[in-house]
Length: 118
Image (cartoon, rainbow, N blue to C red; front, side, top):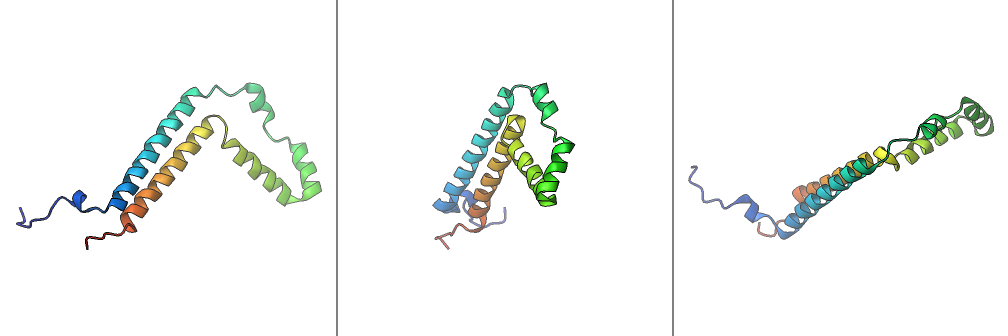
């Protein structure tokens, strides 16, 4: 309509950019499928584990006396990080990591892939 003879923009993409887009799409699909399978196959949490996984205040007091506030914070951080790799939290972790890696592929492909035709 504008009278220009522009070819299809997808045809002008460099091979590196196409490979990065394809890799990003493959990673995104694989991560989302894996996250869905993990989420679907996760058994319900055991009530005893949920009841006793709460940090006992006596343990926190003893830990604070031995190592100070930094030890308590590190123990809480360790418990949180450990929780990312079990149950439904693992499904969310896999999905977020897959989205981040695919986003990095798309970002690198869009902004940093060189275009030898120009």
